Length: 249
Image 1 (spheres, one colour):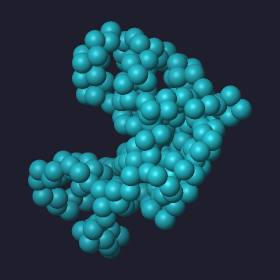
Image 2: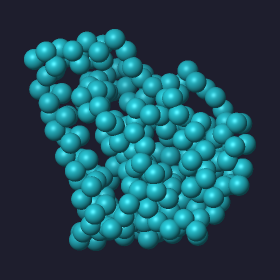
Image 3: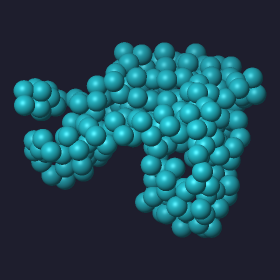
C-alpha cells in the first residue's frame, strides 16, 4: 500500500506485498489516481479515515477493533489483480487507530502498524509549497470538492483566518509525521514532492513498481489507463489570486 512514510528492507519484497502512502494534508489524489490507473499498484484510498472505516467494517461484517481482520479484508477486496494492496495514511489516522484500541498509545505507532501489514514499502508524500497547499485545503473545505471528480456544493470565498489555520495545521501535521518516523525508527523507501508529480508521472510509477520488485514495471506503466483529464492536478486562477492576496497582506 502507499501516502506518508517508511523504509523497510527491500530484499523480501515481492508481488503481493503492501504499500503505505503516508501523506500530508491536501496531497495524494493525483498520485493515488495514477497508481490505480495501472491496475497493478493497488487502489490507494484513506481506508483508516473514520467514516470509511466504519462503513467498510459494517459492510464487510468485520469486528470493530480487529485490525488484522480489517487488513485481511482490505487485501481481499481492494488489491490489484497481482495482489498489491495500497493504503493512503494520514498521521491523524494513527490517532483513530489508537482510540479504537488497535494500536498501543506509546511512541512507534507507525512501526506497530506496519507489523500488521507484513512486508511493506512506505512512500512519503509532501508538498513544498505550504501556502498553495493551505489554499487547496481551504477551497475543498468550503466547496466540498475534494477531488476532480467530486461535485462542488458551495462557492469558495477568501478567508485569511481559515488559510492561516490550515497553514498551522499543515505544519503541525508534517512535524507529527517526522516525530512518528523517528519514534518508529523508520525512513521512507521513497519521498515524493507533490510538485514533482505532474512532470514525472510515469517515472514515479515505474520507481514504485521497482520498489515492489515487480518484474514488468515498464509494461505496467506503458499500458496504464491514461485518463489525463480526470487525473490532472487541480489548479485555477482563483488559487493564484488568493496566493497573491495572502502574500500582499
